Image 1 (cartoon, rainbow, N blue to C red):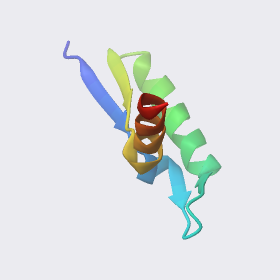
Image 2: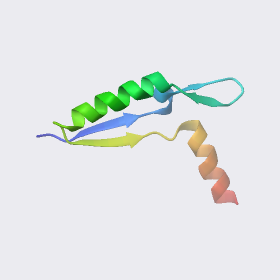
Image 3: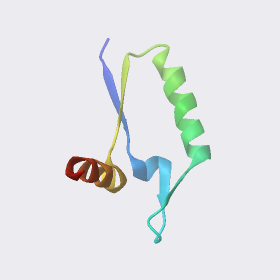
Length: 65
């Protein structure tokens, strides 16, 4: 059986607004969680996440502190 990698990027699970804030797409996230949980029962999965513009800023600021 093959290993499956699943990457959930921020553009899938969040909506980004002009004010720089992101809001979670709760319905989409719930659907993804249900689908991944169901698939995990029969397929070996590795779940990855993206970092994107929101995560990069935190990494840069913590490095400079």
